[in-house]
Image (cartoon, rainbow, N blue to C red; front, top):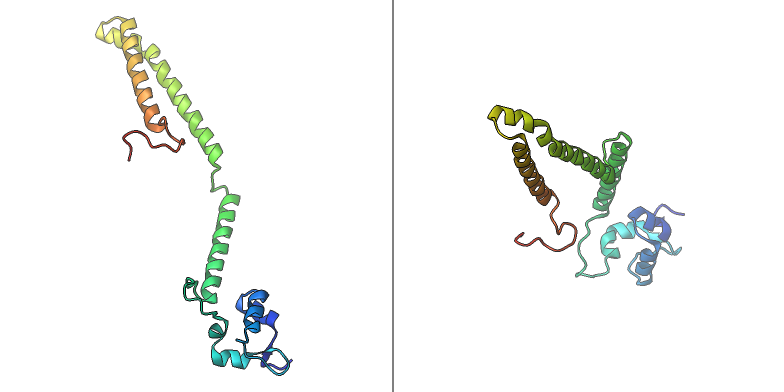
Length: 169
């Protein structure tokens, strides 16, 4: 094959097109052909290969040049490799495992807070010279209010239901 010729398949590979797209353009007689039925590289360069392959659809969005597409593909490939490396080094967290760990920590803190009034009410009552049972009851009520407020803040009733919370914008 002379150096001025290229097959439809090789042109498609070189330009990142499908063979079908090159065949469509070839069928519309928009590609410069040689006497042997191959595509003329010199003719493509002289006419401008983008003009030969442009089908005149002005409404189609400009997707950039093939170089831009290749750069984007390379950037996506690099990002995928970076994520794979981060995963292999343990830098990424599994959402389910993270949520389970948070739930365990929160329940441990909640249990500690619920048990705290019983542990300290006697000490506080002695310092204040008050009834230990009354101090424990008051502390428990305030701890329950605190936990209820925290639960409402961190786990709103409509969370995940798709409905907005009343008054929330």
